[in-house]
Length: 245
Image (tube, rainbow, N blue to C red):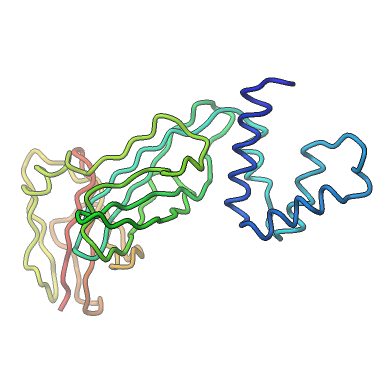
């Protein structure tokens, strides 16, 4: 039980992650309640004693958190792919693999830092709850790079961040027209490209519709605005901005 790597180092990181999850006020209130509990003072205490006290202090159900990060084994390895879909917004796709089958998915608020071409920085937290989850992040400067977990707040390893350049060629070869569009949007793809599905998102990231591939996408029932047409291909995800009159 007194294993430095598992009992102390990981335990300390899980406590740090719990503080980040709950916030300082609720976390330290829970710790004070834990230390002052008359049933635990001057006696042995276990994690099972600690959890309900922290839940009471925060008002949150922490079952998933402790199951993922403490009681079960392993850690996540994250892969973050990003691209600027306009001068004011990024699209981020965040995925993870697990080092041990005891955890199917590690839910967490994932911290990233946006780095601008002029040295600007902005910290963003991604509420990661499903694999290959897509986020749309508003930006006020041109982003040159993204740092993953810049303050080392997560138990994770071998994380990767990449600009979505692997789809650049496919993106250039696939055409949509007319754009702006009023009624029907046409998709023209190379003969050797396979499109598995087509999704249409609002500029805020809300999924509007999802269909199998068709060369024609009906837009007439949608209000005017900017939309993101996402196509899942064998070469990766391809996104096109669409202006609806």
